[in-house]
Length: 156
Image: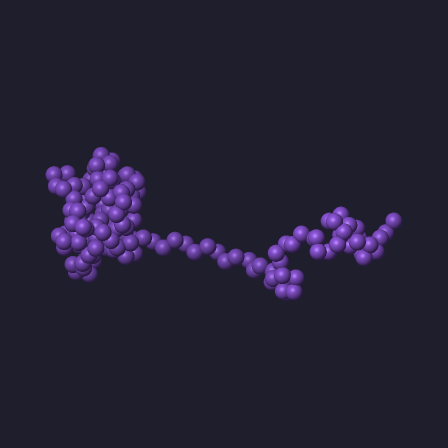
């Protein structure tokens, strides 16, 4: 048996309690036009290469130090010091670098020529250098290795 649409509506209203006022609200504005169909999302943007700028390269290196990621940090340094990246050094210094943001360490990134920068403590003492190699800013010194010296804590 086929029922007209109006009969189906009456059946639905009866099931909800008898009148239209008791139909649960969906929160949708019935007078508003229906939303346009979603367009296909564009391809996600590739993450920016952290090595393109000195400060972002340092921030990325700092993240590797905090995570004691030896292989990750080795990808951030020039070939000549790659063997200086050691887990014991990262574990020793990770606590010092654990909480403060990169700007509290390398507040100053000063150029020294076109392809080299110095990382400076807030007191302006140099604690590391980065060198641009094939367009990427890589650590030229093992700035995370504090054996035999204390890291500066002059951010106060």
